[in-house]
Length: 214
Image 1 (spheres, rainbow, N blue to C red):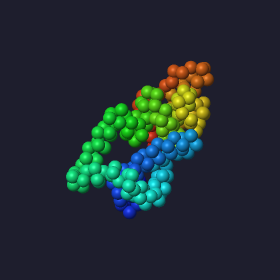
Image 2: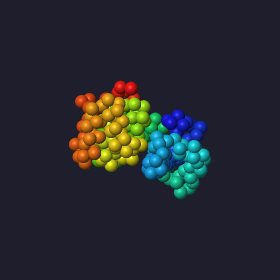
Image 3: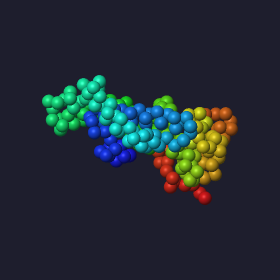
Image 4: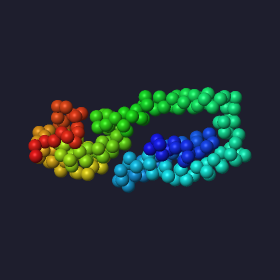
């Protein structure tokens, strides 16, 4: 994805054009992530779908950046007293200043890139995007035979936290049939109308290779 996005032959040549290119890419990822989620499609395509269209818009962005109106805002003109390397360092400093607060607020990495344990923690704190990401990860693992994944999927479904490929009764029943006592207990709890869900002793170890009997 980085190679597609930053290839010099398919990105603007003007500095203002490159800034606009990056802003449009960031906005497109946010819009596509929301749209794909609504459609029930895999959200990991949000990072790629807009790239060909942005590449096709490169020349238009450069023409826009060189227009009389926008030329005055060109960073290359504003920072003419700075060498290209110093301007590059200035860009890195601005990017770092923007990135660190976002990272501190768990807007990057902890939810989107870490994995099921962090997703579940974020989901428990009310992060709807983490709940959806967790469901999307646990679904294939449950189908592949992970009893822990089925159990976690059942809890997500029972709590109504995310759309899941299996309803709660089926997910708990599958976890139980794969030999997970917590899945059997949760199936009984659900049938009784309770919400006191049980998890295995090591809840973070959810993986496709962790299978029950059969």
